[in-house]
Length: 293
Image 1 (cartoon, rainbow, N blue to C red):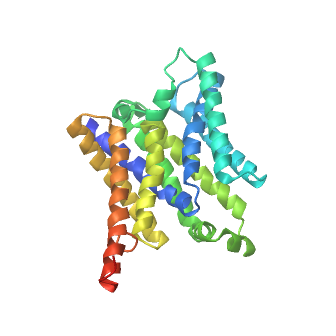
Image 2: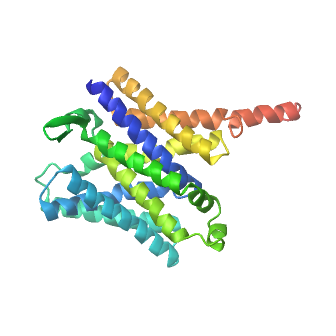
Image 3: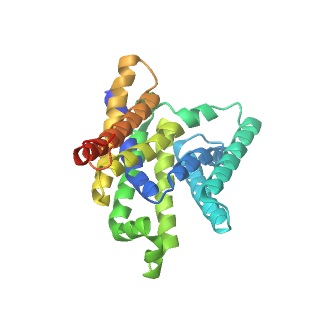
């Protein structure tokens, strides 16, 4: 039963990250997920210092607030003239470093460390159970990640047309009167919540991998956003399940195996995608010009 809960949690993390990650890829903001997943360490540390509580909800709230602050600062620096990649790099390294300093100064004696935040340990998920009125409802991570994924599906469904237009042509969206800035922050709020919910269970590294790799894989397989969203969920779940099987077979890190599987799926799509695959395009070129070198 523990193995099943781990696979369910991993699949939910992969599906939720892959789904919202599609918009980051289309908007060329994939590194923002990396920034958020690192910067939330400061939010976790501050939440502990304020509440002296290592419970899931104070940590989640602190990390979510810091995720939103990271998004705001990146946008602020970019609008002030900094290159977007530079704004992302400066913001997340500064916030992450401050979190490390505060952690070392004031919380070095508690079970809260950078290794836990970065790598997580999904194998422990089945033992952190949500209890309501004395009834065990299953792992807390399943409810947390599943709840955030449901919220992402609901908000994206309500604003799908607006998100789609902003993703492909924000200038046109602004000229048509769409509140581009508000939509940006709504979408970044979903990214922050998804990242925080995911990294609490699986660590920042796997959360980053699942934010980028499934969406990038789906991007190579279709030109339609609706299909891309669905394929990103399929690719994410496939990476989670195959990665878990690989980890069980080799007796290695579960998160590392899942991230590796996600990378392998991307490599397969990069080579064999019907429209954008490198090998497929070369084969088509040889059919058109058989004598070409």
